[in-house]
Image 1 (tube, rainbow, N blue to C red):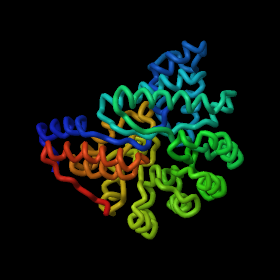
Image 2: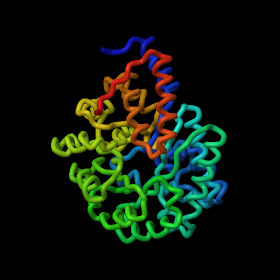
Image 3: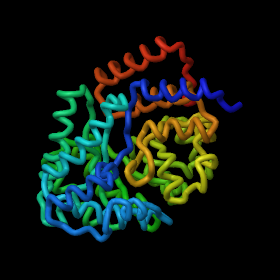
Image 4: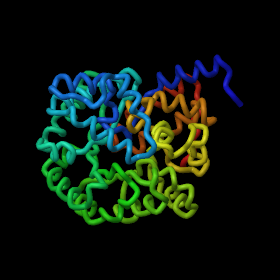
Length: 353
């Protein structure tokens, strides 16, 4: 049943107030067109678009590969740790505004190493922003460097060697970028070496790739979290495995629509994933490119997918449990959410076991 105007307004207010966790957001994916132009000017670069409006008009993609091409173009404005600090801090300031209390951001070092910069530049820039956000805003979290799958296994192995000395500064390693044609099993050995170093694994799987990509991420590279995973419902056996093992799925609704996985938000499978008892939470992926940050995604699924604030609260408990925060921080995040639920008299729809 559609919400009344007053109910809708209250839900919007509650979404804004709710303490939140984000687990799937690419740092450069928060690079707004205005900041891209500012960094280009700072670094003496000319972008292939005449102005901000033309760049915004380019933010329409027929598929993941087309998006990745534009995403990589955006990274060319980054020339220093200071630039990465600025991009990350702009996002973390939005987190502070939107009451995101913990966030884990995807990044990669390969792009910048190929530009001739050291891996430390990425770690120092993003890490410095997180250190300041923790001190100034109380926001916790960290980095999730990803192997760029379409560059192949050898580049991933080189990236792991570069990251190894800094493994205490990262939360996990992931697998991202163009999915189809680059199944997780190709990277089995490099993830095994990462595991031997004590580094956790996550992977983008089942966004455009079929359910077997998800199965390989679970079985072959032994991930602790799946980014996207939306195609799991095509395979009931896989869905049962994900439910029974409570493997987290970080779903990004606006992203899935922007990249043509679903024609409309109304067609998204998120309600079915919740009904299947999966460990799902909502995230923004590349918010500057896909039309909305975490709060926008939450409001969108309430308006278009038939969910309500109680569903969102349940998914926030999932996000806390699925994070790489330590037990003390998870307890503090749960306590904040508990207080919010009690203050506003909310129920909690716990779809996953």
